[in-house]
Every structure is written in C-alpha cells, then in structure tokens.
Amino acid sequence: MTARTYFIGKRLMDDIVCKFGGSSVAEARQIRKVEAIIRSDPHRRYIVVSAPGKRSSQDEKITDLLYTCQSLAAEGKSYEQPFQAVGNRFLQIDRELETGSEIRGWLEELRRQLDSGASADLAASRGEYLCARLLAAHLKAEFVDSAEIIQLDRNDAVAESSYRRTAEKLAGPGLYVIPGFYGSDSHGQIKTFSRGGSDITGALVAKALNAREYENWTDVSGLLRADPGIVRDPQPMAQVTYREIRELSYMGAKVLHEEAILPVYEPKIPIHIRNTNRPEDPGTVISAERNSQVRPIAGVAGRSGLGLLYLEKFLLRKHPQYRSKVLEILAIHGVDLEWERWGIDSLLLLVPEKQLAEKGEALRGVIGEELDPDHLEILGNMAVIAVVGEGLSKRPDITVTVLQRLDQRDIRLRLIEQGSSRISALLVVQAEQFNRAVQTI
Ligand code: ASP
Picture 1 (tube, rainbow, N blue to C red):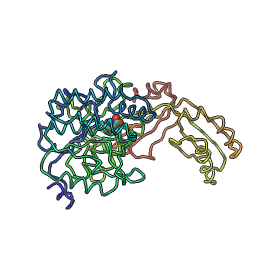
Picture 2 (cartoon, rainbow, N blue to C red):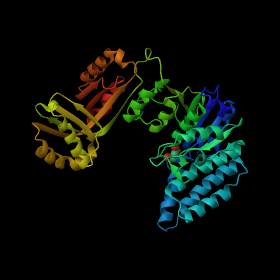
Picture 3 (spheres, helix red, strand yellow):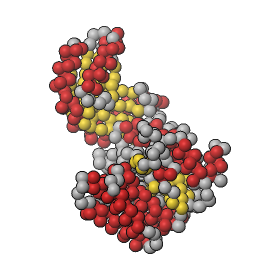
C-alpha cells in the first residue's frame, strides 16, 4: 500500500515517520517511553533511531565511543576500554528490555570489523545499527538496514534511487525500525552523514513514503523563541516555517540538522518536534506556512565570535572586479565569508573572528597594497542578531520598536539590515552587548 501510494504520488493517508534522538534511546527506561509513544498511535509505523546518547551530563555518547574505538584500532592500540563501555551499554539495554536479541553476536562482529580495519564511518554507524536492531527485537518490528536503502553518491548527495528503494522496502503493513545517520556508497561501503545526521534519515524516509508527518522526538518540548542560556524561560514556538527555521539555524539556533529540511521541503511534509519525556506537550510544527498575523515574529537568534572588515573606495560600484578581488584575497588567506553588504562606495564583510585574529594583519597588508582602499577598518568582537518572522515584511513597526528599545538601553548598532531576506532583520552589535540586546528584543 505504502509503495503504491508513493508511485502514484499521493500523500499517504495517515502514516507518520518518527525519529527518536540519542537521549530518547539512551537506556531501557527511555526506550520504554519510546515504545509507549509508538503504541499509542497505530500510524506511527516507521521508526528511525539515533545511537544511544548521554544518560547524564557526565556520560558518553555511543557514537563518540565508537569513533574512539576506531581511531585506537587504526593506530594499532588497544580499544578495549571504550569497546567495553559500548558493549556494556547495549548489553544492559538488552537485558533490561529482555529483547532476546543476538546482541552478543553483533558485538563480536563489531570487534572483528574493528580488528580488520573498519573505517571510521563503519564503526560510527554501528551505534545506530545496534540500537535499531535492539529496538526492532523489542517491538517485534521489522529491521531495515539503511545501508540497503539509502545510497550516497560521490559527493555525498543522496541518490534519487534511494527513495524508490526505501518505499519498496517499507511497503508492508507492519512496523519498521530503521537506523539513522548512514547509508552506503556505490561500492556498498558504509557512509555516514555529518554529526546529528539521523535527522536527515528521518526526513528521507518521510519523503520516500510521502508521510503525513515527520515526528522528531527529542528531549525538549519544541524549539524555543530564544536561547535559554541568554533569555530566561523562553517559550517554545507552536509553529514555524521552513524558511524561518533556516534563518534561525544559520544564525546559531540549535535545531535540527541543517540538511533535514531539504527532503521534506518540496513535498511539504511537516516536521513536528516533540519531547519523549513529555509527550503530552504540543511541541513545534515546522511547515511551509503559518499564520503570521497572530505572531509576526518566530524567534530571535544570533552569534558572537565575528569580525568585521570595512572598506571604502571612491567609485567602488563602478568596479565589480574590486569585490571579487577582496573575496579572492580572503579565500587565499583561508578566511571564510559569513556575510557581506555593499554600499555605494563601501564594502562590509563579516568573517569568523578567530580567522581574523590570525590573518588580520596579513589581510591589511595585502588589501592595502593590491586594492589601495581610501579607508580600511578591521574590527574584532562583533556579534550578529537576527529577528526572524514571516510577519516582518508586513509590520515595519516591529523593527522600529526593536531599534527604539535597543537605543533606550544604550545598545549601539554597528549595522542594521532588513530586506535582503524578507523574513529577517539583522543587527550587528559589539559582542559585549550581545546578550543584553537579545534580552531586550
Ligand atoms: N549518532 C550520531 C551522532 O551522534 C548521529 C545522530 O545522533 O543523529 O552524531
């Protein structure tokens, strides 16, 4: 049924893809919560899991331990200690859940793989692999190995054929468990995504099945409107659009894996962020549209650690090669461009402060020599803040209010920009004023 609906391109009636993050599968107690969530809705039929994460702040993530095992093995050193930690964790989960699985055999196989030169990708992927196997055994669900359905091409992009294969493999009527974080290359070798990549797997499966919703279960009750490290008790957002999330995460808000939006963006499958420890909480729905009249602003994010390069040159606009030359100089010096803004006769660039601290003087020399600017300023200690919301373009008064409030609190803006993205206003401030500015907004 599932595969067929995929082929005729219709949305599945009601099926849901659920991805459970590391904290949701960190131990047997958590996995029981996962089970209750799955059992409470028969439409939750496709379960993607991360590797067990930390049980407490001092604990270690299985994925980190596996990377350590692999690098020790590659150096010919003993990896016994981290391997024991991995093994003990899975054995304990298996014992407490009484899964009756073949966990001992799977761990032995992992040891053999490490002894025979397993790649870092293969080793790291075993966290998700074993977790999915255990959960499938526990739920009496079907295990489907991601290596058999998700293929990554030479540039690490997901091959289109992955979607068809996934839909075919998951076409039965039952419950499926799929490990996140990896697929395989064209030679059948395991390839992982970047860290946090189980979010991507969930999105790929949701797209392949044209699922009604992609539930992303984690340990927070949704995405917060601001960083709780800066603002006291920020509220979660009930709804946010894909575009808003892109802006907020580029600006430093820690949300989903960046690449998890793309697969669901075009088929408009909503992503629902939910809390495994508080399944009754509404969470945050990320979707193509939302009613921005009620809440024009979705959230505020920002980051410090930026440096600024400001150049003035009379008639700069008339010489577009000038800008390319500046970018080329930055690239040669290994300085990344975070953001740029042209004036009539000026150019302002934001770059990582650390790189600027190392290369600033060299840049000053080269730019001075090759481009002969009328004025060149290099400043460290900058921060950028984004006020993000679909309602921003229709409500210019919001930006005005933000600016007034910042001014009342003596927060000096180095730069204001609104318009290059219709849904965000960017403010650049001195790093010392960053927290206070975010709190004020
Ligand atoms: N286990 C992997 C990591 O720690 C992937 C994931 O959890 O999404 O990065």
